[in-house]
Amino acid sequence: MNILYLCVGSLSSNGIFYMLKTCFPNDEITLANIQDNTTELLKNKFDIIILDCESIVTYINTLIGMFSASDTPVLALAVDKSLLRKLHNELPGLHGMINRNGNTDFLIKAISVIAEGGYCYSWNIFDYSNVSCNGLSEDMYEKAGLTRREREILQFCLAGETNKSISLRLSRSEKTISAHKSNILRKLGMKGWQLKAP
Image 1 (cartoon, helix red, strand yellow):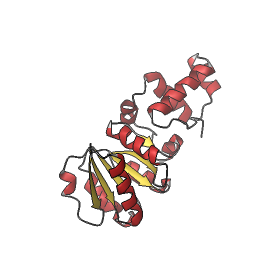
Image 2 (cartoon, helix red, strand yellow):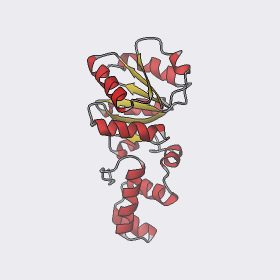
Image 3 (cartoon, helix red, strand yellow):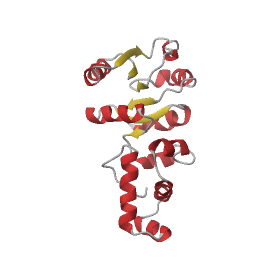
Image 4 (tube, rainbow, N blue to C red):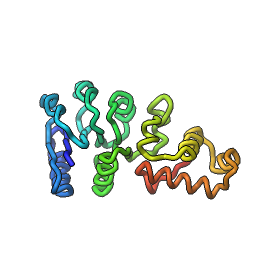
């Protein structure tokens, strides 16, 4: 795997880079400073770009312009979800945004999921209903491998419906609806979350 790690060059980002080198010893990992002109670097073929959002507010518009021509999936590392709306709406290659200060195992799993074409987020899936106009896109559904029924159930959940109301609509048991929700979360890389009405 060929990974580009874009950061601001702080002590903590150097720690993340070292962790990436340790966890992916057989892979090519390139470290680049956001403050440098990385436009030429982005012309190279990467399997995934990890964008460290620490102190990037000053460079956000430049970064969005640079990434607009790239079709490489991007994983953003952030301390909170404040940049989620901007990145989700303006960064076409965004496939995930996870907590920068979170679990190392989760970061490794997120990289693997995104490198395989999936999506992974640290924050609850219902944050999407406030991020983009219509919630999750068809592209996200397709790449996550959601079935027609799972897409339908997810849309009902995003609309605020309970298991009981969904089961009545679809003539299925609440237990079946709950099983579908578990499958949805697993496919979206959010195993352990609860999929419930906002």
